[in-house]
Length: 68
Image (cartoon, rainbow, N blue to C red; front, side, top):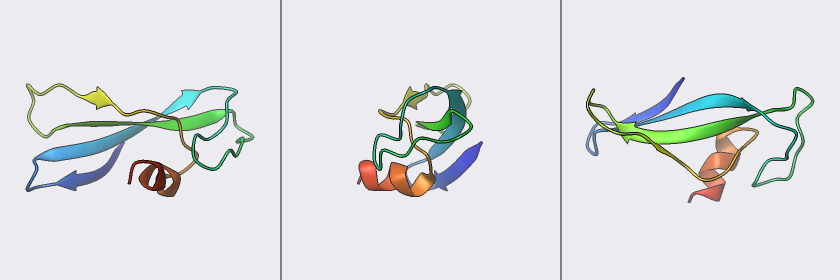
């Protein structure tokens, strides 16, 4: 799922749900569904390689606060 795109850096941020029994790395919240978001950043080209970013998060705001 596309979260954001930076046309000047030619990068996109995507997220996917990961099944885990852990807690959010920023706020410590445990979700009832036992799924957290994992984010990855990659170029907007087809041949580019995506990098998984550190941490699992309950929301996009927790992700942004953790990585800012």
